[in-house]
Length: 278
Image 1 (cartoon, rainbow, N blue to C red):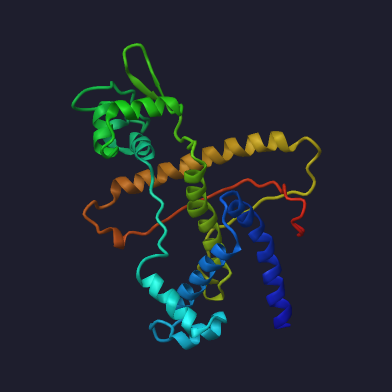
Image 2: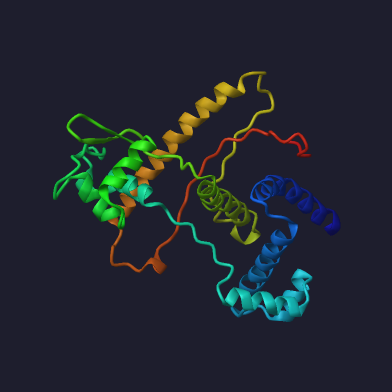
């Protein structure tokens, strides 16, 4: 029974890894490099989350759990201690400016909508917005880039108006990193939490709607409808986050803050070799 259960889980991960491997190939990453990353995660999780009485798991138990040699575990632990396995995904200055244009009290109207801003000025201006939230990026450069990606429009008097709440980066690498960390990682963390028996009385929201009866040619229309509705939902959640941010204590240390994300997604199977059934 246990063997069959393990095989079912492995079969499912074989399916889940198909899109992962496609991405790795696209960036020239082969099995050896991926295997090193996988071993590092196995050792890190076994060491930090499966100890007894609140202590880190010893090397012998990690070896039992992972099947790796103690010598290999020591090597990987040394690498982890040096911080060589850290992952950092930062928001861009453009994203920060756009977010605060919708969130900061100085730059929204009484109904919470982003103001039309003159380029220059000491208060309620685009220059001031960029100075506060754009790091060391010059306001002129920020204006040029925001116009290029289509999130703002400039009128004849030089006033700037937000026309899109989000923008899509033209860098595949940056987009990939953001989607994996904020999308795939968040979703799989949800799955890990909800399938842990110790969390049975405090599960996280997770809803998926699906159909196997879509008519030929209907997917195009469904993609459009789902894109619009997902965008609307995401913006409503972002408004809630903005409200919490406004109430947050700026003096509070970042280590005491909770990271929260809400995600909704659309999916179509495009891999003819993905062997599974809804």
